[in-house]
Image 1 (cartoon, helix red, strand yellow):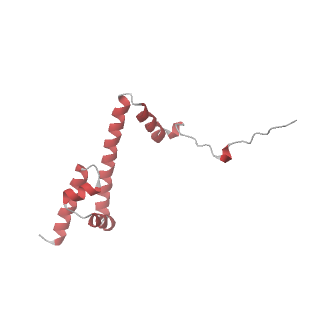
Image 2: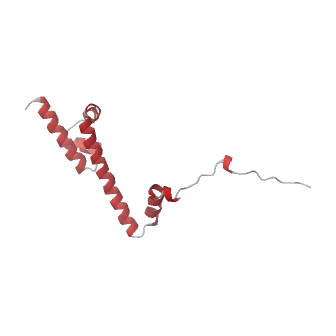
Image 3: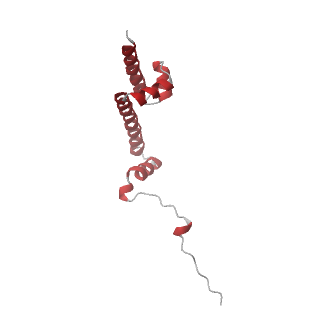
Length: 111
Protein backbone atom coordinates (compact mmCIF):
# COMPACT_ATOMS: atom_id res chain seq x y z
CA UNK A 1 0.00 0.00 0.00
CA UNK A 2 1.42 3.38 -0.96
CA UNK A 3 1.94 6.11 1.61
CA UNK A 4 -0.89 8.16 0.06
CA UNK A 5 -3.32 5.21 0.25
CA UNK A 6 -2.24 4.48 3.82
CA UNK A 7 -2.82 8.11 4.81
CA UNK A 8 -6.25 8.16 3.18
CA UNK A 9 -7.11 4.90 4.93
CA UNK A 10 -6.05 6.43 8.27
CA UNK A 11 -8.09 9.56 7.59
CA UNK A 12 -11.19 7.45 6.91
CA UNK A 13 -10.58 5.49 10.10
CA UNK A 14 -10.21 8.75 11.99
CA UNK A 15 -13.52 10.06 10.64
CA UNK A 16 -15.29 6.85 11.68
CA UNK A 17 -13.71 7.10 15.13
CA UNK A 18 -14.80 10.73 15.41
CA UNK A 19 -18.37 9.69 14.67
CA UNK A 20 -18.20 6.90 17.23
CA UNK A 21 -16.81 9.27 19.87
CA UNK A 22 -19.29 12.06 19.00
CA UNK A 23 -16.45 14.32 17.96
CA UNK A 24 -14.13 13.85 20.95
CA UNK A 25 -10.74 14.18 19.25
CA UNK A 26 -8.55 12.54 21.91
CA UNK A 27 -10.79 9.50 22.13
CA UNK A 28 -11.06 9.22 18.34
CA UNK A 29 -7.28 9.48 17.93
CA UNK A 30 -6.83 6.59 20.35
CA UNK A 31 -9.47 4.53 18.54
CA UNK A 32 -7.91 5.15 15.12
CA UNK A 33 -4.32 5.00 16.35
CA UNK A 34 -3.62 8.49 15.02
CA UNK A 35 -1.62 11.09 16.91
CA UNK A 36 -3.33 14.33 17.81
CA UNK A 37 -0.56 16.29 16.12
CA UNK A 38 -1.10 14.29 12.92
CA UNK A 39 -4.87 14.86 13.14
CA UNK A 40 -4.46 18.63 13.43
CA UNK A 41 -1.89 18.62 10.62
CA UNK A 42 -4.45 16.91 8.38
CA UNK A 43 -7.03 19.50 9.42
CA UNK A 44 -4.60 22.24 8.41
CA UNK A 45 -3.37 20.69 5.16
CA UNK A 46 -6.46 18.94 3.77
CA UNK A 47 -9.54 21.14 3.27
CA UNK A 48 -11.74 18.15 2.36
CA UNK A 49 -10.74 16.34 5.56
CA UNK A 50 -11.52 19.50 7.56
CA UNK A 51 -14.98 19.72 5.97
CA UNK A 52 -15.64 16.08 6.85
CA UNK A 53 -14.50 16.66 10.46
CA UNK A 54 -16.70 19.75 10.71
CA UNK A 55 -19.67 17.67 9.52
CA UNK A 56 -19.02 15.12 12.27
CA UNK A 57 -18.90 17.97 14.80
CA UNK A 58 -22.33 19.12 13.56
CA UNK A 59 -23.68 15.59 14.07
CA UNK A 60 -22.39 15.70 17.65
CA UNK A 61 -24.15 19.03 18.23
CA UNK A 62 -27.36 17.62 16.75
CA UNK A 63 -27.11 14.68 19.16
CA UNK A 64 -26.65 17.00 22.14
CA UNK A 65 -29.60 19.13 21.01
CA UNK A 66 -31.78 16.04 20.79
CA UNK A 67 -30.87 15.21 24.40
CA UNK A 68 -31.67 18.78 25.41
CA UNK A 69 -35.10 18.52 23.78
CA UNK A 70 -35.78 15.29 25.66
CA UNK A 71 -34.96 17.06 28.93
CA UNK A 72 -37.35 19.85 28.00
CA UNK A 73 -40.07 17.33 27.15
CA UNK A 74 -39.58 15.83 30.62
CA UNK A 75 -40.16 19.22 32.25
CA UNK A 76 -36.56 20.17 33.02
CA UNK A 77 -36.78 23.90 33.72
CA UNK A 78 -33.03 24.52 33.48
CA UNK A 79 -32.93 22.92 30.02
CA UNK A 80 -35.86 25.07 28.91
CA UNK A 81 -34.19 28.24 30.16
CA UNK A 82 -30.90 27.26 28.51
CA UNK A 83 -32.57 26.71 25.15
CA UNK A 84 -34.42 30.01 25.33
CA UNK A 85 -31.28 31.93 26.32
CA UNK A 86 -29.28 30.43 23.45
CA UNK A 87 -31.80 30.00 20.65
CA UNK A 88 -34.50 32.45 21.71
CA UNK A 89 -32.44 35.64 21.83
CA UNK A 90 -34.21 37.03 18.79
CA UNK A 91 -37.47 36.78 20.75
CA UNK A 92 -36.11 38.66 23.73
CA UNK A 93 -34.93 35.77 25.90
CA UNK A 94 -31.69 37.38 26.98
CA UNK A 95 -30.12 38.13 30.30
CA UNK A 96 -29.21 41.69 30.98
CA UNK A 97 -26.23 42.53 33.09
CA UNK A 98 -26.44 45.84 34.86
CA UNK A 99 -23.18 47.67 34.88
CA UNK A 100 -22.26 50.84 36.71
CA UNK A 101 -23.02 52.84 33.55
CA UNK A 102 -26.57 51.42 33.49
CA UNK A 103 -27.39 52.63 37.01
CA UNK A 104 -28.74 56.15 37.34
CA UNK A 105 -27.40 58.06 40.34
CA UNK A 106 -29.84 58.87 43.10
CA UNK A 107 -29.74 62.44 44.31
CA UNK A 108 -30.46 63.06 47.96
CA UNK A 109 -31.37 66.45 49.35
CA UNK A 110 -30.47 67.13 52.94
CA UNK A 111 -32.53 70.11 54.07
